[in-house]
Length: 287
Image (cartoon, rainbow, N blue to C red; front, side, top):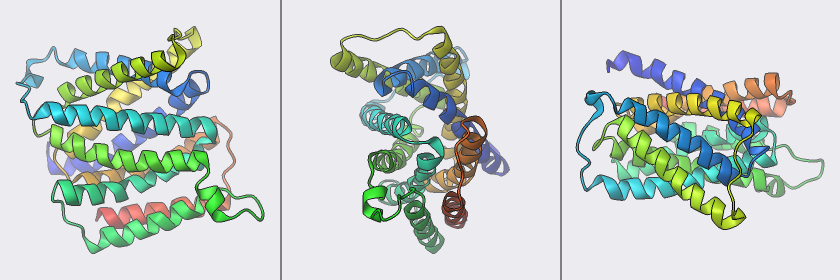
């Protein structure tokens, strides 16, 4: 892919990931997180599998891929569960921007596992992101910041951001071994299988989606496949931390606008200031 297309691809990926948040939040309001993840990833895996009809994506599966695949599935399951659990506990606009912490984790993991250098801009930008994350959670009058920052919804989203940073590194390593449709299909189906077993263990049954839920599953499948495809294509050719910074700088603003327009969530000055700091930090760290 030409280098001049990588930046637009990262922005497109961020818009697709933000658009995915809405149907996922609607689903988790009606289904347990494990069940929602099972259906979303099952349909995504089947959609990715259709791309394998094109011979250009074929290739051998080296032995080195399978340990990465197994670890990636486990980390992705934990990430998706933490994300949807947070969505079920708080307004989308209050917790989703905390995912802007993921580039900080990606820079650190990329430094240790991929040998990607840490520049001064990335360090300063990460500091601005952390300040914005501190300001973002809404506090009641007289409530200590520790109690709010570590409330369940925020804690789940912070954990999701850390896990997302690690999955970015694992995905980049996997793409050195297989094509993005192969990795997307195997990863999605692996997550779906693990969530199927988890849901059966907890609830002893797996409810079938209703007619209304199939609409949200269809939207989740479309946006999920498109978002993951653009992400995998981009990180195969650019540093994972830089891509995640570009993605999150667009995602933080776009998600708040979507939640304000579609979910009628209130946007106060605190969220605007926090997201502004995060966007500035993300842009500085991506240069």
